Amino acid sequence: MSDPKVELARQVFKALWEAGPQGLDRDALAHALGVGDREMREAVELCAKLSARPSVAGAKPEVVGFDPMTRRYHIANSPEQADRIMAYALSYIRSSLERVLAYREARTLRWGEIELPQTIQQALFEAEQKMRRWG
Picture: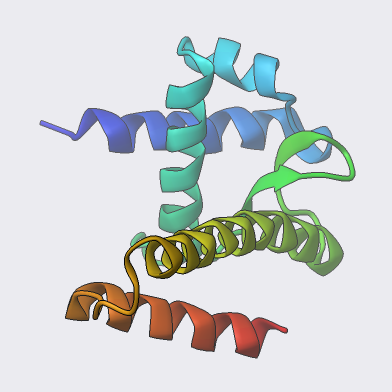
């Protein structure tokens, strides 16, 4: 029996493939899947992960996601579109990291220099290092 989340991710790919280069807007993709917005976005996220590293022999890796220029979901049609999809995803990572860094600052200002748990220290260090590499 197949995982329902993986099946929904496959439906995302199928719907975007059938839509062709024009892709699908948020409402159309959610409607095609028969789910709400949040579930659709989660399915797109899983589809993107699975499509980037296909397990089917002969399948090509694909970049799947939201293109802010077209305001639609796509299977990328060009390196430029893939770059826009990646930049859009990275904007969420930057925003989230900025929020966590603000939490850390507020924690220090509120309670002083109390050592953070090792897992949080390591995660912040790794995130900051990656953000520096991404520029």
